Image 1 (cartoon, helix red, strand yellow):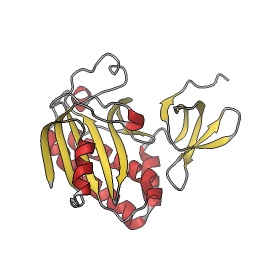
Image 2: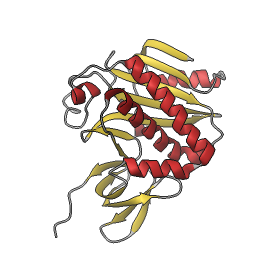
Image 3: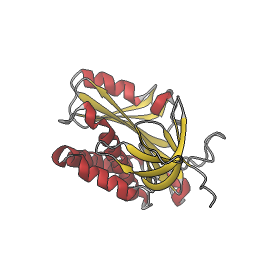
Image 4: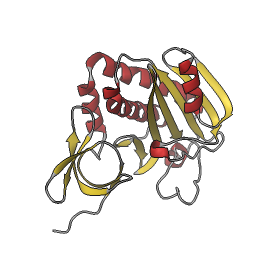
Length: 241
């Protein structure tokens, strides 16, 4: 079931309401425009009318809260696969929830648990030809990357199919194959010098893969290996030899 709206404050909010009413697995809420689109850590998601795909999918999977990190990675894989299906571009995945095209953010994932449902909020920049000044250097769209307009309906159909496929893999075979696929698809997971920013601190180091839950291992400059459970990951300058 797909619910379509011209304008919503956030597709996540409407999906939460539908989930509480018992809507089925793979119910999708789509808006042409969001007035209060939500990203991770309370950030806003730029949601201009008709230019992007703004959707929240209600998932009913036999998974627990401990699987939420792997679910986020699975959704990133699904989003990247759908973008490649539709636009024939290669995506990079930046842990934990960013999909990049040509080094710039093209899509993002927000995952929340509500009762027995998982809400998968996904935003894809599809047909933007420009972005606000504060985003211009870090964001891109499928149209900018390919020079061609993208069909939002075709993109949605591919996305729902890929979400069903890859979350099904997680449910049937566990985290390991999803984590392996994410490592293969991401230049950020291993051997990348990054800065991790959280509300409490900033950490710099080199990534060393994922743990069994899907959290990121980071080797700090002082040699200590730590587990990153949350935070924004960005490239950092290499150490001088």
